[in-house]
Length: 169
Image 1 (cartoon, one colour):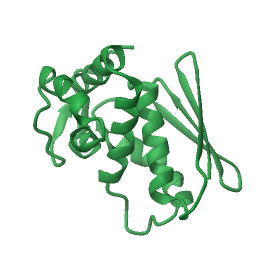
Image 2 (image 1 turned 135 degrees about the vertical axis):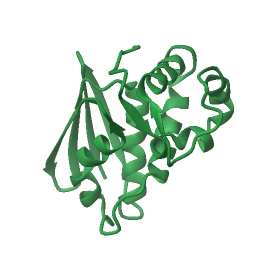
Image 3 (image 1 turned 90 degrees about the vertical axis):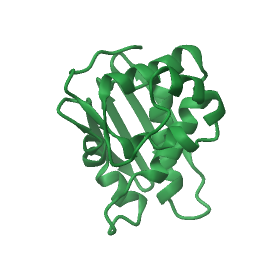
């Protein structure tokens, strides 16, 4: 998948920090060099197409574990408001957090459905990112905010241009 995005759209560097210190960083470094992402500043904004192409290259030529590791690590770097101290609160503002990482364009839509106690469904539509990266973001969010000792389950499905994730903890 190599989607085209608005030429004006940008991605916040804080959302890219998982690239630097993920468990798979050694595998990702050649892609960072190829796409001019050797240095990432969490205070800067980067051209979205550069980021989309970077992730698409990893999806095509790397492996799914690289993307999952990046997504999981990225969640550790993203700043949530101080009152967000539970997974329910974090997921309740997932749409806002998703849109906050992008500017000057549409990064796709996110629908959050609270299905039951400790069960949420996230539906991403027209997202310009690989499903394995989004899986890592979902898993990393649960890992960061779920009560200690929770058993985490993330099920994913791709239907046309939509990614569905069932999260349970």
